[in-house]
Length: 264
Image 1 (cartoon, rainbow, N blue to C red):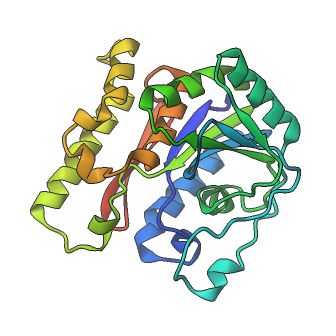
Image 2: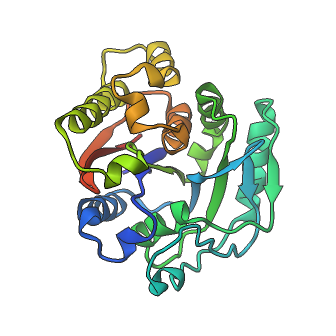
């Protein structure tokens, strides 16, 4: 079996997936199942919703630390360890690939991995034996730019590298903690249906699929599900890398909200 090129995941709420939280049982099981099914990559590139810079920025350190970028959780949340190695050579490759597409980038030898990286990777690859590089979002949050960033990374397909877009297909923090209602369920499910259809439907030409993803905020329920789009844009990078409909969709419930993941 050939290694897929990219995977968009919903990474859940802070460290809760690692603390046995009942709202993340399906998510944890899904991530474990995906990792067990696909070939083990030689390296990982993770685009996390929790890192934004003026230009695409790439971790280039040999042994990145962990950034506990969440607040108000139990003490054990800040003792989580994931001693995954970095990959400076892969970081340099990514830097060159982006430059070849006319996309200015930056190498950062100091930054560590945020929880959008180490939480899902600890679930998928608990031995921390696959080197990883993290790639930032661009803080303009321009959807077409993030598709282009993915397109620039197509050379990674030859290197047995898996690109993971770590975000959340539903990310309305107020709604997570508000009482459920018929209206909120309808908006959540309407956007999920649209996203599953666009990412997996075979009725679109690729130009149409790209245009729909660029214009995502016109989808039903879009701004309810994503008041701010940083948790959706890792999906755009994944699509840009593959430029085709996904090969597999995973529909699940996370924190009592319909959510989805996509494998290309």
